[in-house]
Length: 415
Image (cartoon, rainbow, N blue to C red; front, top):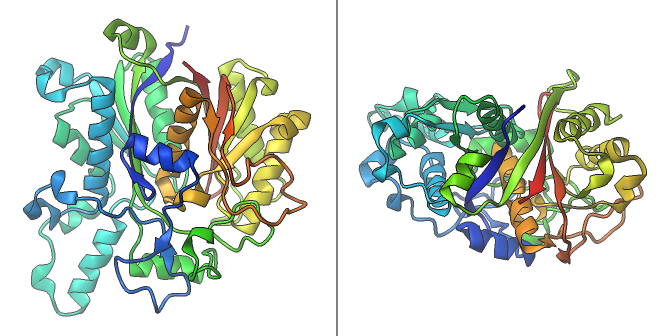
């Protein structure tokens, strides 16, 4: 019999709030964290807004000397992990070496230290080679990010990074779930972090014509999932981390349980580097596989946390996938897209959606999808438009879709 896996700690550093409860309060109230970019002058870019984490003191988590050699993702990830550990009552400094060997770390990140590497190239090509970091190679190597978190807290179990595009953090949680299920470890830290707000990254997404460009003057209205006038996503950043435990291990510690991971699945359409196959069959199959593992019929699910990027194709194809996966029950499902509130934090988006879903379960209130102003006949489900809704529910699906034809889904069960 497979072991059951529960979530006992949540940490969040989000564009709309630093800390779990600040993030959740702003999310359920529909307070947007999307604003004009301040990290650099965006006036030369067609898209000038982003979900930036503002007023975040990086030096609370890494010292000034370290920060010269680290990407922004490191302090963001450390901060969210620290909050999740405290929430779960895990105190690394009080654990023995043997106990630290039994805690693993799996981080999901799409771009990792991309903004750091971009800055190193800028220094090199502007004649400032002497300012390049001695840790240019290890910091730019994406897998080192998991080690930064392991080293900060002394965890000596496995330390891995999953990078599968936008599904990265969903897959990181899924892999942690599998390790605990299989009895490899009883406790793991898992989640996602990305910080892709940098000039060349913004330019690259702009060249793909998938960023919204119409709302530079009204940033809070820029991300418009499922609305007929949507024209692209808003880039974002942030970190959302969890403490996952084997259920009996958590019960023995007497800690609060937010919910249970009841199922996980991932597939690949093997279709295109960027585009989705319009039939929606593979994301639907992914959800079906996760429901099958959870041992529940589609009708048991009451809420879906959508990927919901606000690109024309993603939203209508994801809607189609939900109809395929849930049949007539799709029209009875409440669902929402967090990207309307925080932007698209790339590989961290799945963890953000999972955090919001678990907190929605706790408080019996699901967050809204903002900026749904114009109905789209191809997006005709219940996306909880513009205002949060009271909802007491047992099961939810957190869905993710990524570049490279990837699809991943988690089934979450209320505690």
